[in-house]
Length: 394
Ligand SMILES: Cc1cc2nc3c(=O)[nH]c(=O)nc-3n(C[C@H](O)[C@H](O)[C@H](O)COP(=O)(O)OP(=O)(O)OC[C@H]3O[C@@H](n4cnc5c(N)ncnc54)[C@H](O)[C@@H]3O)c2cc1C
Image (tube, rainbow, N blue to C red; front, side, top):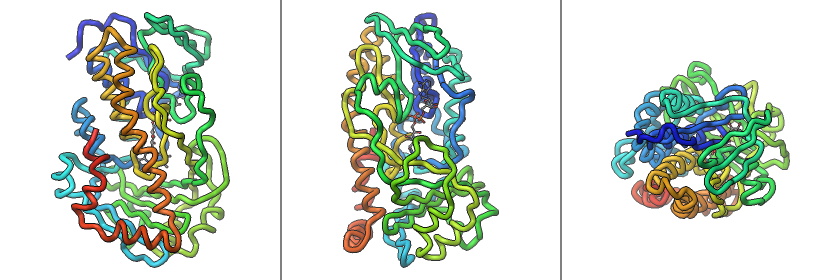
């Protein structure tokens, strides 16, 4: 598979999250050398779950990583939405054989560390990928025929192009797009992971369950071959703290959920320590590249998590970017423009629809009634038809 260009200038990647690692691997699969810089002292992901729609498996299959991801994942039989005040089932969508037949790929949930670890291992197994920790990309110069990045220790590294996978607060996006800080949604996510035996048997469910409440929702599902249980509680708040890993105050969260059904409150009571995410996104743009610099993943299209698609979209980006590069290796600005052209509408739709889903999950009063009629009144086939635009791609 590798072309004889391993000695040529490498692609430079800023950021070793899910997007950066899969981009490095996808480019190496096409035969290109890659140098990836990650600012943290080690490659790791936070302890939480991640849902994987059939669309990510379609691209993972192309790069030979589908089975490795599924090996540690859990396959939920259904996705269920329930009313957090009454306990009523609003909708139940099967995710088993009928779903896989419709979309040609499965639905799975996994630990972030497992998907990140699989991508890391894939990179480590390639002699075309060099991974460098404790190295922050501070700037770049595009010379037209190559690129130079400046690292925090002052070293300058040359490459054939720079792929910015540096996330929601991307410095490279700031220079390319200049759209300021991300938009704070006013929603906060508290997350925790329990061991299977810490979850009472009558509360344990193999499905992805979402409890929709007024200005809140609570999601739980098993992880890692069902050995762990992932919990995410989201509520409206004007709190703002940049980053992903601060400790969340238990009593603040409790105020928002204490009036909900016992299946919710009993589960929430089991958690001693919550980690907190302040949820942000951005308006969609299509300025993803300039010359030899291109954005990927959250740097290009940060979205709220309500469609569970940020990592799926970053992985789609990576595989498609590598294909465009392989189709036009001697004109990388053209390859990056073609990648942007293919990706920006799909990712914009996901950004916009994620906000709509968030409104629906948190609806109150008549809006909640409307939601229940809209999502509860559908047949399974109608539910599948409604998400075809997303799960049927890329
Ligand atoms: C609560 C929540 C739930 C979610 N659930 C899902 C889900 O179920 N399914 C799904 O698909 N997605 C989900 N997502 C979205 C998903 O987590 C993100 O979209 C995805 O992790 C983005 O990956 P990334 O590699 O683009 O960015 P990041 O993961 O942010 O990685 C960026 C990396 O770049 C590094 N970096 C930053 N600046 C520099 C620099 N200057 N130099 C070097 N390195 C740098 C950072 O240290 C980091 O490692 C969820 C998000 C949240 C908040």
